[in-house]
Length: 398
Ligand SMILES: Nc1ncnc2c1ncn2[C@@H]1O[C@H](COP(=O)(O)OP(=O)(O)OP(=O)(O)O)[C@@H](O)[C@H]1O
Ligand SMILES: [Mg+2]
Ligand SMILES: [Zn+2]
Image 1 (tube, rainbow, N blue to C red):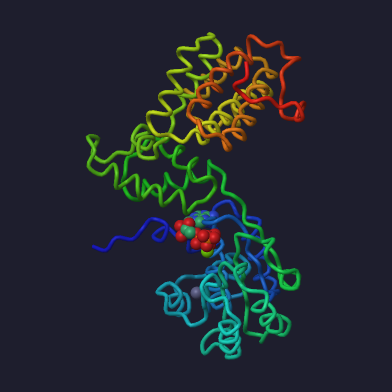
Image 2: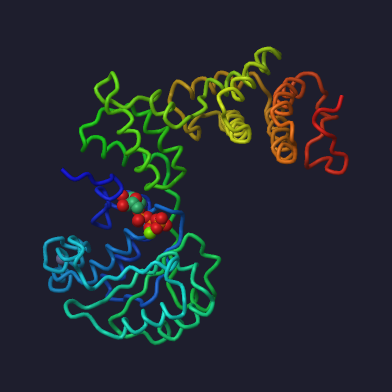
């Protein structure tokens, strides 16, 4: 049996299966209904959020025989039928009406000339030929210029979809001739739901919290989330729980610094316990976690306190319920001002650590100093980067 990675196996086949990009799919579907389709589109956004997927469904719709022949179906469903000859060609990868062109590896003027040559010929079957030009920001200026003419006077059958993760690198001469769609980062909840339905379809038992951990790691990219899920499934396959995916297992695999360690830091501050704080620092160093990464997570941890303090709700804290309750409880231990002072100090520490050699030693001291910041030093004399940039002292001065 051949194995297909999840990201490909679960690539959406219809507009309505694309998660969290309704602002894009709705507009495209409307233009199909009204028969007002442009010749140039730019799809921008983070990696793995549905740009190529949407472009393919768009191309498939433009050539779907049912959409062309059945006005009612076009108005009411506005999805590729998946059954006509053209749709089947698309699904099997044999359609000649779609060309994908990777601008990262074909970015010379000659490559563009070859593409232009190709564009002159209309489709043998169907109505439109769609050219998806991926990573278009990698084209040279000369290559862009070579393309401009084609874009100004495109043959009626040609539609160009330029996909990019770096919109600002596309010359205005190109982007002003296109309709632009910005694909959003996919919200954690939507990623989690999608992963859950994949696990259901694959008959894999999974703890909801484990999927949340995967989703957080993916930071808004559905493809990243699905790739991590592949890895997690392989990792869990022969475990003691019959392949079930657990929160703890995912944490181990992702070498994830767990929330308990973060709460150890704030507990050490609350109880003014330097020994405990040193334990945390040692734990981080010994386990080979990256100090900067740890500080980044610590900022997120403190941010969660601020959110709870300011909203009186844990709604925006992306954590399992038990951890949310802990934030709710512990938030009473600090004033918002104290939390912000810790955040400022950590930001400063991050900057300073970049230029230090005795890295780990400084890291330990910085953690210890958090206790002082909240308890010993009167807040008025504290230096934050924004207040006293000119008098910035080294962290370890006494
Ligand atoms: N919005 C989404 N809804 C559902 N699945 C998605 C979505 N975005 C991405 N995916 C999943 O991730 C895979 C990759 O998506 P796609 O190729 O469309 O990303 P992309 O935005 O073109 O990324 P890149 O910038 O890396 O080319 C798809 O096969 C699909 O499984
Ligand atoms: Mg893509
Ligand atoms: Zn069809």
